[in-house]
Length: 427
Image (cartoon, rainbow, N blue to C red; front, side, top):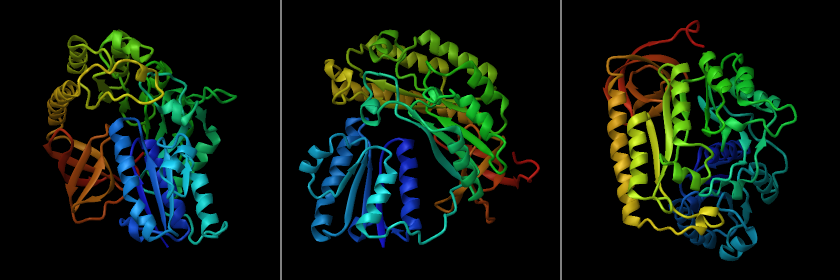
């Protein structure tokens, strides 16, 4: 039996897709890249921007011919594209099943029933990747006017700490060495649970797990990141010095229109406290350009903020209205060509800043957790989430090694293998 999986969107989708793939492979399925050869096909979708929705619709349309040739193939669509399944069935009658975001269990159950597999497992649990995503909270309780996440994923739903701890322990036994805790707003973890544990408490609980070397988390919300969390990150050796904190705009009027819940001054104060508590921390952010009503001066406020803070990474997107959001009722009055210009300016600025930051690592010896090989080279990430490539004949999969940085670009580093860290040196 063969399966085809196509996934687009956020890290939560990546995590869901990995879970679905693992379940299928435990049932004896083998992954193929040609959808025409698959017995089961899953599209895990995103509509956070119009460009993502266009890709989903285009790929979904291309599978109509596959289903015509192989009507017995099982085609399922999951993710934020799925809003009203009844309407979608009318538009795409050849799709067998539409599933809401993260409904991996529903997908697996449907596959078992469709192929009469019951509950049997053909294989034991598979080895885990070196670095894995672990969702800890689904949905979101914020009402950002541009965002469709709450409409599609619902209110915040946190997983109990004991469930998360058990999953991480199992992943580590199967070979994982790094976990990234995921949530649309990971900083608000636990507020909906009876005992009100927070993310800092969860980090403390995961830290003692033997064999777990690194812990990361994303994505944070500036209005919800507590000083307790900052101090916990600073105090726990396994928690990496890298934070993703979307600012979205550097103008207070735009932030208010977005209903982000903080001002530029408050955001800058947060960054100051983080950098004081966590020396050498790397910061990533998200920015939207061309939000309804954004003037040239308001855009330049964002540009100047990025110049001032000097993030390691900036994810920038041009605003596109999402049906059902509050912002979709505003006039989308920034012309497409102007959005592209502003986006290009941010990209050029950030390429320069990232190049300058990474150039500072030239000649430095950095600690790398090796995740695998790509185009004949080993690759992994530093604690500050810098992607590093190196060549060496040894087998360093899943190992912690020291690499001396010899080349630095805006998006990655290249270096020379120095040595493997001993078990005593590993966390």
